[in-house]
Amino acid sequence: MTSADLFPAPVVLWSKPEEARAGKPLLVLLHGYGANEQDLLSLADMLPEEFAVASVRAPIVSGPGFTWFPLTGSIDYSLDAVKDAAAYVQDWIDSVKDQHPSVTLLGFSMGMTMATTLLRQRPADFAAVVGLSGFAVNADSDPSFRDSELDGTVPVFWGRDQQDPVITPDKIEFTMGWVRKHVKLTKVLYSGMWHGINQQEIGHVSEFLTHEVLNK
Image (cartoon, rainbow, N blue to C red; front, side):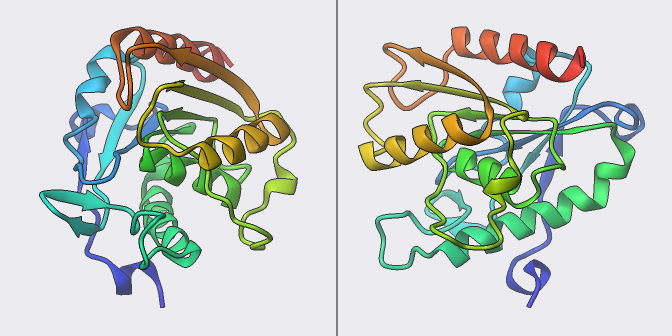
């Protein structure tokens, strides 16, 4: 069964009209739990204009918004649910990536789980990953997570507030171990941001994208 059998067709919002996208590096935005594709698109105006920015809606209805998979603390959560959602996004990326010289992922909260999962399943496919107030999932020894192929060269930005009330300590601990072992990490801590994004962080993300993607 493919993601097309499980989920509706992807809903995607773009920062640029179709005729202005081809040939530009692609930046894919992945929102957090209970949000939608409009949630992060406003960031496009604060990020380097060289990117074609696409914001993808998660496929599962959750309250007033959408989710990629059931919350990790819920009885419905499974690693297979994470993998199904990643396949859903990957199928869409595969349908457009030939029009772009590179693909970078930016995920907030649960969206960071999606971004890091996509990287772990296709280690050679992405120029960089930006994770904001989120985590990488513990995949145990699942063979579809090809962590051994991540040799510390893919740039990953991880921004968070140590007082974030949403992401639990066990998730932070696992993610810390994973990023230190497998990627080229830029880690920045912010205060007073809680479980959110602030102007200073977006400035740092913009610098990161310019340095690690546009200037490579």
